[in-house]
Image (cartoon, rainbow, N blue to C red; front, side):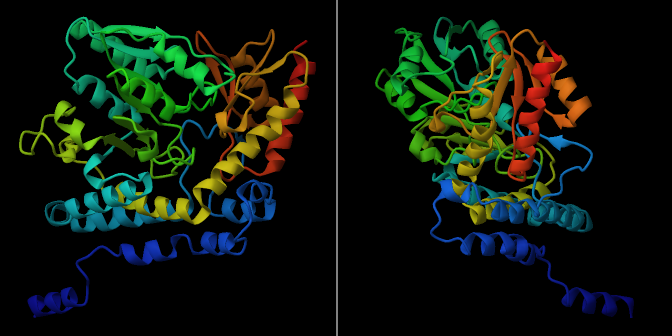
Amino acid sequence: MYRRSFLETLGKTSLALPWTSILAGASVRVSAATAARSGVEPDVLARDEAFWREIAAEFSPAADFINLEYGYYHAAAVPTLEAELRAARDLHRRSSRYKRTQMREDHEAARLALASLAGVSPEEVAVTRNATESINTVIQGLDLMPGEEIVYSNQDYGSVVETLEQKAKRFGVMLREIALPLDPSSDEEVVQAYLAGFTPRTKLVVVTQMINLTGQVLPVRAICDAAHARGVEVLVDAAHAFAHVDTSIAELNCDYLGTSLHKWLCSPLGMGLLYVKREKISKVWPFMADMRLAATDIRKFEQLGTRPESAHRGILTAIEFHRAIGGANKLARLRYLHATWAQKVRTWPRARVLTPREARRHGAVGTLMIEGVDPKSLAQYWFNEHRLFTAPLGHPVIQGVRVTPGVPTPIAHIDLFVEAVQAALARFT
């Protein structure tokens, strides 16, 4: 009797996880809001607070402070979080059977969706845990000989620089640091800054698409073209640029790229992407050994042991949500939020915005310094007195406070920040 009852129940239950209903309903409201404004230019839509209130309603930020530090990672929209949590519950119910029979299917679904968004082949995309892991994979996995050189900038991400330093110490690779201009007058100025570091021994250049310290967006395609003309490969750190700057990986023409999906794609936390141009895959050793797969298989980079595939399912919802808003609309809004405070503050004595003024050279991320004020003290003041959470920076090149609004940020929060800057100028005299 028990066996018959069990089989009858099983017959009524799909063995497939119920993702379809989650995906179908995840972005209906956002799609409707966007469709209602069809034909509106992104720069005009960026100022439509009613529209962005509808988008913000899909998020659930804390109520006890104002978050102006979406740069560390951008919290997922509620539909994405719900998809991930439902996936986790189903995964634990099915346990080992899921791992042995359906796990790979979910990996492939995430790969296909990300490749489509990035404009590249699925056979060039690996799903990792973050940008740092992706970039480590390439730097540590390339066979470079003692004396061969890697060029990087004085504003690259700290963990990336540490990876380069370990590579140099361990294998005798030489590092050449170049100085980036803070507010370049042209793309050519940036390109020439990198080329100044090249020698006949240069094999790789590391380029950050959006500098995490200031939010400056670099002309990656121009740098890639110039490097390739000299026989140098390019590794792009796109941690802050992917799903933020509205360009595809294919448009960059780089050889390798690493990014974090939990930043501007708003995916579940702990998701990243590694892109390796198809003909380069065999050159790179995987971060963790996988001798079963061909050297040319991008999947060799996904040997990370047991991990929660529920996050892979959340990626699908995050991509759908991003597409529903529209990449160009999202970028225009983020630029508008930054420019609203930066344009005002630039005119005030003692306040210095370290982010380039030109729109195409920035997104949401911006950095402000007040002459004579320690960044930590300034950020602490804004939080204690104004409940504004920002990020102080103590970098050798950049001393200031990073201010990063996000997709749910209303213009009212930017106005409050402007008032807080005025108050700080009066407070720290």
